Image (cartoon, rainbow, N blue to C red; front, top):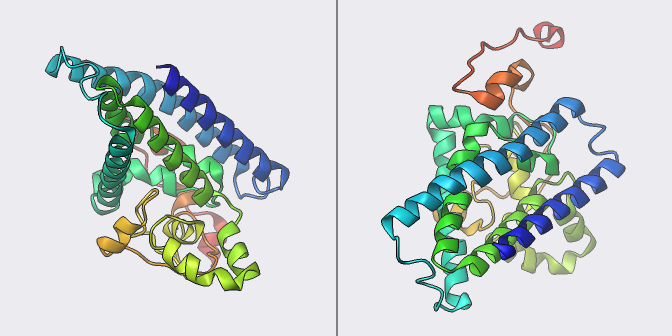
Amino acid sequence: METMSWVGLIVISVFFFAFAIELVGGRIKSTQRPVRDALFTLFGMMSQGIVAGSFVGAVAGAFVVVLWPSHAGALSHISFWIAFPLIFMGEEMLHYWIHRYAHEWRWMWKLHRTHHSAQNLNVGVVYRYNVFWVAILPQTWVGAFAVYFGLGEAFAVAVLITFFVNVLSHTSYRWDLALREKMPWSEPFWKVLERIITLPDTHHAHHSYGKSAHPNGNYAVTLFIYDVIFGTAKIPNQKQTVYGLPISPRLHWAEELFWPLVKKPLLPKPESIKQS
């Protein structure tokens, strides 16, 4: 538990540091609905801790105890260098398919849609969730099993890597394209890396629509190679201009956060949309 406490501290510190950089840089203030977006992020952070961290963690923990009551720490003898890649790649695979189905199955899309309704991309979107979406993310469930069987350290490293990549791929700063432009000699390196790891280039395309977008693909959180393997990869190598969903301004906040408990019709079209 001490290891996971340190992981939680590192994660929240990195997030606030990255958020502060965007805030000072004017990236948050310049968004279309900064207050609404900030409240959504705050809600997601709380639901992540309360729903996923407490409720789901408790349920998953009780589940493994009931099934394997005398096997606590039974896998602790396994080397970190074996446990880590298995947990990391397995969790990434689960997340890829859950994320993909969330774009293909309507009921799951209604849960996941909140993450995509942000009209500007920044690190705050990392925590932009419907409360029930948090409950089906694989990380907490996998974590309960890993910690119970004595593989907590391997799981902790997997969590940190996933989180760091998630922050770096959601940031509004297009650091990957900037580095490629300033160091053209490194292009062969990027051509390999972008097919293995999720970069802002591919994840921004996932959160946008219109030119150079790819909302129904680029599902991997960290290991983009899964998109390459399963045929859902698109690498635009250019900036996107329009983020969110065409209906983003018409979504009711209560449905976004609490569907299916709360169901609301789309709000009327703004006048600017009606006249266009």
